[in-house]
Length: 545
Image 1 (cartoon, rainbow, N blue to C red):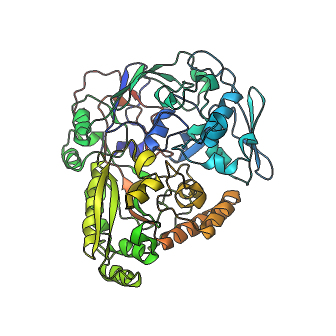
Image 2: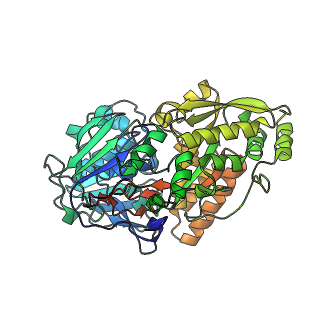
Image 3: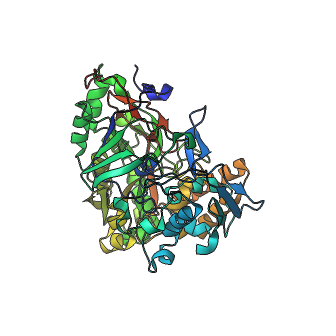
C-alpha cells in the first residue's frame, strides 16, 4: 500500500461485519445534540446516531452527492422555491422501536431554529441558523400526515436540499427531549445507540436493533461496537494510534508536527499515512467591534504583517497545506484566485504596507490586542504564537490566550459579549463549507444576520448590507454560473473589510490504524467518511501494519 492511498480509492476494502471501531480525541464533542453542534467531526460522527432528511455519499469523480436519507427522495420544490416537500421512508424506527414520524422531524427543526417557541424561553444554540433565517416562523413547517413535511420559506432557497442534510433535521421525539441534557443521550434513529457516555472521558456505542440496512443508502454499520476515547492530549493521541490502541483520530485534523516527521520518514508507517486536501481553510478573525480593530486600516495592518509562512510551518509545512489568500478554497464553487493583502514573495509579511495602514489608522506605534486559540490543538496554538510574533514586528502586541475545543464557540470565542469583555480582538479559526456550495461556506461567517449570542461563527461581527444582499441574491439564483460569480463577489467584498485572514488551504497528514477498513474520504465533511468505516477481520497485524 502506498502513501496517501485514500486519494486513489477505498483503503482496505472489507465485507467483514463485527468487531470494535476505536476513535480517540483530544477533547469532547461540542455536543451530541443535533440542534447544538457545529464541529465538522461531530456532524460526520453524529450520522451514526441519527438520520437527517438528506445525506451524502460520494460521486464517481470523488465529489459530494446528495441522496435521500430519512426521506424517500430529494425535496420537491415549488416553482418559486419557496415551498419544499419531503416524504419519509416507511419503517424507520427509534432505538425503542417506536416509529419515526414527520412530527419528530418538525419538532427537531423547531427546537433548533425556534427554541423559545418549544421551551417558552430564549435558548442559545451552537448550530447554524439557516432554518431560523429561511422559515416563515414556527408555523413554517407543516405535517399534513405522519410521513410528510412541508417547509415554507420567507425567501427563495434554490439549494434547500443542503439544509435538509443538516443535523437539525435528525428526528427528536418530543417526549424524550431532556434539554439541556439531551446532548448526553440523544435518541437514536441511526444504526447505533449510546450505551454509555462520560463527557470528556469516553463514549460507547452499540447497535440499534431497530435500524434496517435496506432503508439506509448512507451507512454500512459493519462494526458491532464503536468506542471514542476523549480528553487525551495531542501527543498521546498520536502515541495511541501508533501503538495500535485506536484506529482513527476523531478530529480528522492530522498528527502533531513531531509525529508527522516520524511517520513520513518511516517506510513501515508511511503506507498508513494519508495526505488529502480537506476543503478546510485555516484563518483568523478580526473583530471589528473591539479596540483598535474598529478601524479598517488597523485590521488591514494585521493582514499585511502576518507571517503566513511561519504559520504554515506550525502545521507541518508543505505536507500540511498551502498558503491561502481567499476565503473560498478551490474545492468550493465560486472560488476565484486573488490576493487582497500580498505578504511578499516569501510569505512572511509586507511590513511596509502594514506600517502605512497603521499610520492611516492613527496608530503609527501599533496597538495591543489578544488572540484566542485552542491549546489542545497544538498546531493551531503554535500558529497563534507565530502570528503574534509576526505582528510584533510592527508594534502590534497580541497576547495569545488559551482555550479548549469543547467550549470554544459556546462559552468563549463564539460569544461576542465574552470577546468584548475580555478584549479578544483576534480568534483562531478553521472553516469548511456547511454544504458544498459557496453559500454553504460563506453565509455563516459573513452574514450580519448569522451573528449569534453563543455559538457564533461570524467571529469578526461582519455587518455589510452589500454582502447580505449578495448572499440573498445568490441563494435564490438557480443558474450555477451566476451563483458562482456571486460567491466570488462575496469573497472579495469580505476580504476588503479585513475581518478575516485566510492563511492556509488545509491538507491533513492523517495516520490510520492498521485494522481500519473501508477507509475513504467524505468530500462533504473533509475527513474520513465515518458512515462507512469498519475494522478488518485480520487480527494478526501489529501496530506498524
